[in-house]
Structure formats: C-alpha cells, structure tokens
Image 1 (spheres, rainbow over the protein chains, first blue to last red):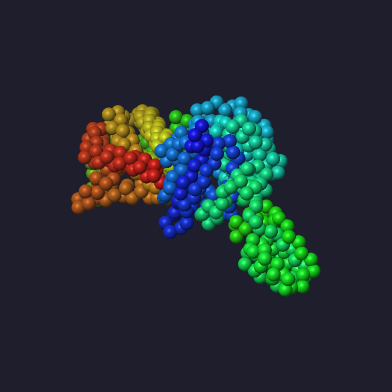
Image 2 (image 1 turned 60 degrees about the vertical axis):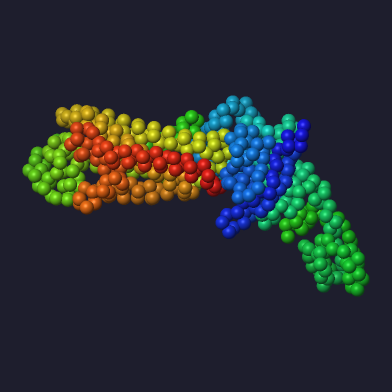
Length: 291
Length: 263
C-alpha cells in the first residue's frame, strides 16, 4: 500500500478567507486510515471552517485536500458516499418524524440501513416516533449520530459530537466509535474537550486563530518540556516562559517552559520555603497551545 | 427522486392552503356571477368606458355581463395574482430555506450534490404548479357548468397554459434569487410578484408604457387577452418569458454550484 492510499484525509496548505476576515490559513496535516484522530482548538479557532472545506460546503481560497484519495472539489459526491458527518449544531426538518429523517438519509444514499439504524436507535435510546420539533438538542444529536453511522462509512467526521449528550450516551457514542474503528473505519473527531481527545485519540492536530500549531501523537504533544512549578514562600516571581500563574496564600504555582537555570537562579534569591517541580497535567500542556 | 418526493411532502401543507385560498376566492366569484349579472348589465357600458381603469382590467375588450367577460376581467385577475404569489414563494424559499432553517449541512453532506439538490427542488416546484393549474382548470370548468354558463374550453386551456408559463417564469427568477440568498426572503418573493403585476397594469393604462409588457409575465398570461384572442397568447412577450425562465433556472444552477453554504 503506498502512502497516499493509507491516508483518510490529506490537507495541504488549505486556506479560507472571508473577505478581510480570517478563516483558516495554510493548514496542512494528514490523517491515516484506521485512526481516531483528534482536532483540537478553542471556539472560533477554525475547526468547523476546516471541516466545512473538507465537506465541500465552502470553497477553499487556497491549497488543496483529499479525502479517501479523492479531491474534495472534484470528487465531492464520491466522498459523500463514503463518509458520515455529524455537524456541531445538528438540525433536521422540524415537521418530520425521527424515523422519516433516518429513512430519508438512507434513501438518498440508496442503501438499506434498516438493520444498522435499528441497532443504533436501540443503543442510543432514540425515540423514532417523535417529531424533530419535539426533540431537545441532545436528542437531535442522537438522530445525527444515527444518520452519520447507519450506512457504515469508511470515515466519520464529527464536529463537537458530545455537546448536549448526557454522560451515558457520550460513553455509548464512544463505544460505537471504537467498534466501527475496530472494523476499519477512520474517525476524525473535532472537539474542545481535552479529556475526550486524550482518552480516545492516538494523534491530534491543534488549531489556533486559523493556523495549525501542532500535529503529533498525544504522547508527544503532552511532552513539551514544560514543568509544573509550585514554590512556597514566593509571591513575586516573573520570568519569561511562565504561564498559568496562580498565586496561592502561601506562594505561587505556574507552568514553566523557560530555562531551568534561570528559574533556579531567580528562586535562589527568594526565601523559598518549599519547591516542587512536576510534569504538568495534560490540560495545562494543552492550555499552553491555546494561550 | 428521493429529494423530489421529500420536497413534495414538505410543501404539501402550503400547497393545499394556497390552492384552497386562491380557488375559493376565484370560484366564489363564479358562483357570484348569476346573482350580479342582471345588475351589471346596466353598468356594462359604464365599466367599458372608464378609460385607463377599463383598460387596466380589460373591461374595454370583453363585456363584463358574460361569464367569459367576468372571468377575463375579475376571476382571471384574482387567480393570476394568487397563483403568481404562490409561484414566487415556492421559488424564493426553495434553496435558501435550507440555510435559514439550518438543515443545509444535513442535506449537503448526503450524496445529492449541488445540481441534484437544485434539480429535485425545481421538479417539485414544477409539479406543484402543474397540479395547481390542473385543479384550477377542473374547478373553473366544473363551477361554470354548475351555474349553467359556458366557458370556451379552448380559451380556458389557453389561459391555464399561459398561467403555467407565467408561474414558472416567476418561480425560476425567484429560484435564482434563492440560490444566491442565505435567508428565506418571502417578502422579496411576494414583492416581485406584486411589482410585476403592477407593471402589467401600467403597460395597459398608457401607451407610452406599453413596452413594459415585455418585462412582466402577467402581460402574456392576461385572461382578457387570452379570451379575446380565442385562447392564443401574444408570441413575443411569451418567448421573452420563456427565455427569462431558462436563464433563471441556469442562473440558479450556476450560483448554487459555486456558493459557500452557511451553517
């Protein structure tokens, strides 16, 4: 298998601008087939813009991208046959019944999904007799999950899939993702929930203000060389490389990514009562990417 | 085909409401005719000699005391305006409603493609307009028979076909606007229908403004003209209308294929 055939998503210098407004700028990364890949970033960073470019909803102003080997512009319909997408704000036709929406999605695809959709509805506890207008956001999202999964696509693209879902359904959703992944499907998971990415993804890309700032395994992303410092008896330390500074009653704690010699020299001039230097939590590491 | 059926289903309610509303108003006038034809006989000459007002409603061409005259001047106007507004609404909301209703992401990430979406919606619009006109034809012919009056079948068929062409023109222009707009601009659709109707009236009142008849579908589909001309339609405005229809549809495809779709 050559390198291109092993890629589910291949993005090269993808750029989208809205007039003078920023969308995404020169974004490049790859997602290998069979992976559960995280796409992290704060709100407004460009996650949805990247996904909407990939899905052909908006046209990139620069660069290119391919999904499952097909160009996102030329191969749009072929790509849509092979993927399942759930948007962050799932909305369907209000007057339709849940069962009608699920059937409509299957009919358009020309696939008999009755068995799979029945299984998904049962596991996600979807009431198929209700009308869409009667559903809460969480229940609409569950319908969105069924529509994205029922045709057993090769690639799932989920944009903040768990917002609005209760913890039990969240767990069931990730269990389903794991099962489809074991059967060979790739999952591209956009989220700003770090714990989800840490728990389910092996690799992740991080986007901030429209630019890709990191793309690596979770393990490598977490090891940035930064340390979590807690210094008792110190209250006025200010050095380059300090972030997430928190002054406690008896001292201060912060994440430090600067020179350790400089830190120790600065601390030696203070009246340090106690000092601890630890690996920072994953949340603290990722917050450094966001800041 | 799936989207076509889906569109027919979603638009069924509004179709029934508009059909019943427009036909109730226009057919009501047919049943009113036997009650007022005697009293109108005295006023017929007066109606026919009111200058621009008579010309605007075609009362200078057909005697209002016959059902065909009454149909051409009154009922035809009500039906043309009502069905024209319905056609405009169908067109203007067809594509933009997906974005204003936030269902665009769902629809566009199925396997339809942009052209498939326009085609499915266009076919549903044409189907509903054809059903609208077919129902109107049956109701007009049936109610005329019920009151013991005759309407020339040739003229009625000509009128209904002209109406279909005019409605399709309005719908296609509005479909092109709908392809461009992210919002369901129902007011714009109604406005277009009303402005084009007024253009036809102005074109009929003054000779200086007669050229306006080439810019509005209400000119070639005017009931009085069709009934006076034994069911035939003025060719040049009709051909212009057909060209506008084709351009409107092609523009809708062209714009919708390229445009960014809002979330």
